[in-house]
Length: 110
Length: 117
Image 1 (cartoon, one colour):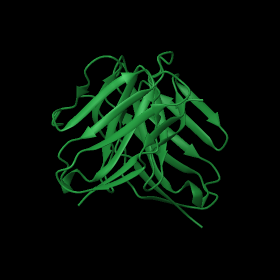
Image 2 (cartoon, rainbow over the protein chains, first blue to last red):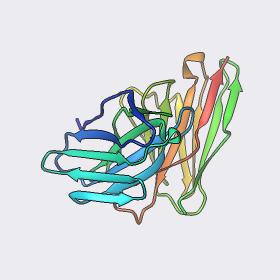
Image 3 (cartoon, each protein chain N blue to C red):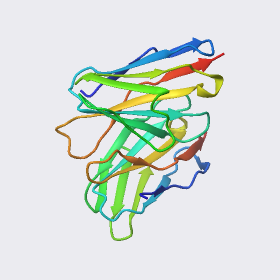
């Protein structure tokens, strides 16, 4: 059973701080890793994805991947109240659907 | 690119009726589409994987006779909730993947909120 684990939160950070969201996965054969954001009542939207070990930056977002530790994280710099949402980690391996974590609820306090 | 639409965005129906939800990939051909259900404050639950021209693959515990999926073309998949009951009220979301994307990236539609009275 392929599993993706996330802390459900809520994770509360003050406006302007760095929010750090973490995810672990069970399948060592996983090849690509995604972070989606889901606002309440809306469908998920892709923030970014990462394939290789290390960091990948896109604007205020940085994804970090450590395949040896089976760990992927998302850092949000200069957090804004509009970043308050549930963040879903998803993992892909082989010819199967993405496996989603249950999500971490982030609350950015103004 | 990679836009997925769903129709309707919301629907209210009486218990016992059937409801059809459409999922379309607007600017790409999607060989595979996925249907999810999400109850309030709960996580996404994959219901089935739909491949164009073949039968859908349903996840364990999902009744294939109740949730009929038809992937008739490379841009359209439909989910029909047959004989809907109040417990079927949920947020139904489809997603699609591009055949050229080996990453498994899925693009989500905006979702359909179903309320069964």
